[in-house]
Length: 307
Image (cartoon, rainbow, N blue to C red; front, side, top):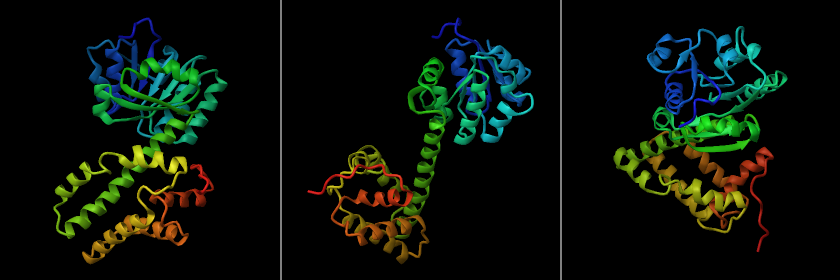
């Protein structure tokens, strides 16, 4: 447990996600004061050691570390920079820990203004949901100076079992947004797969089980293929682009036969066909990912010398 001699911590936003995070801080012995515009949210702490601030002014003046867990950029901007917000009353040396899934631009703007007041900030959005917060098993993605991350670490440890310091201020927010983009994009392509599969004669629940037990469900691409191929620029064939194109062509053909409308699968097939037209068919299928590098002008993989 954390000693009560630690600095007083403020927590703004004790709703669905913020509440179990704040409760974990309470359980770990932090001297905690909370604020929320919803009285029903703060009432959940009645009868505990947690104090409830009547205003953001009060919270800013009493706390050395302030956590924010708000619905989005609009609420965070209002809390920090709006009339009666935290910025105007913040004390030098205060550390803001922003758990909001936020705008990286706003995060950097706020951090810059806080520096003028000799205060600091890290962005630390979390992944794992309400259940993870209650169990203390969140993954927290941190952006900011190392010294500020280390100062935040004792708090983060109370509700996180994984903490990744991914870069300078704003980087944690970028990482969280990219996680969500990948997750929801996968949802959409799985919806296409399930509808194609159902039209072709396999029950959706059975197909979902098959996906869960196969490479995609085990995270093989994310944990093994992409790190070993694209990230290293090593496109010696594990599974060739020709083979991948054949499989996707058959899947799209199946959708057409079942008159299942698809958008994502056809777009992926078009991408593979573009890579094929460049004479890359005998290379690893991940080489198609380099098309996005070329379009963006952002080169990630290190190209190996042809042998």
